[in-house]
Length: 325
Image 1: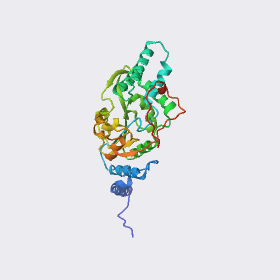
Image 2: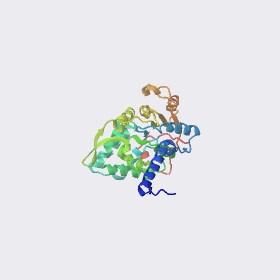
Image 3: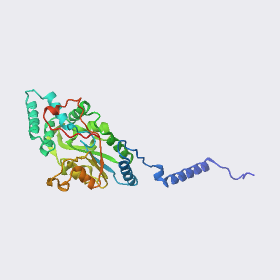
Image 4: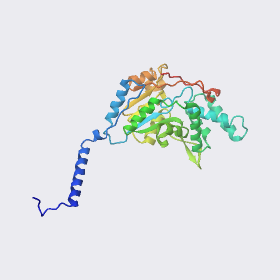
């Protein structure tokens, strides 16, 4: 028999619905890992051992509440550098097109900078790296970005390492910030790396110079991201201790040692025994040293495409060593 004094109304139904929703939310919060788990996707071309090391490390970061930062060197680490660095090819390509044979003061002064760079010959040296910026001074940031992008399209398409793209995709899945740190002028690399890797151009750091009245000046902003300077860029501009750092050469030693988690070394040299000037690497090849230190050593295919005619070759800049996979 129905109770004539009790009449269910819409208010009771609403209270019941709210209680039901609260109960479901409590259940979901009790199982955060099962509900919001990250998924590691195996990187094709790398061994199961390497994939397992990376996956196991990433799984330890799932519950971290602080910034998760990964830093990658540019040339030779995310993009191929054989036979020449893109930064060099972009400059010599541009000079041959716009300055060579011209008699105006600007063209003469820009060609003089390149002649000084060629005479120096050490295209990983501090003065050479600074002269790249001097060559670009007077141009707008967008013009420099287009110069790098056009060089990428004409001579370096397909040179981004597929394995590194897969690694970066995994890191994004696990909530990492991705940063690129290069010794090349940063505006030169920002457009094409942003497009290829899907990261903000502000996360692509290179040699910086003051922009005044809309154009790049000769005033270089310290630190220069080269050798120990790369390590100094991290606390100066990124402002977080990276959990993962990837590099490829002796010049990445100080940067790699800033990692408090994984160190990944791509195509490390195994033929040149480093000397006393290389500090802790003295007596080792780059590969031997990082094997000793427990870094993750990986291979990515980096060979010359002989169908491409490089302007850098005509300027007699040394070639980089091939790394067939």
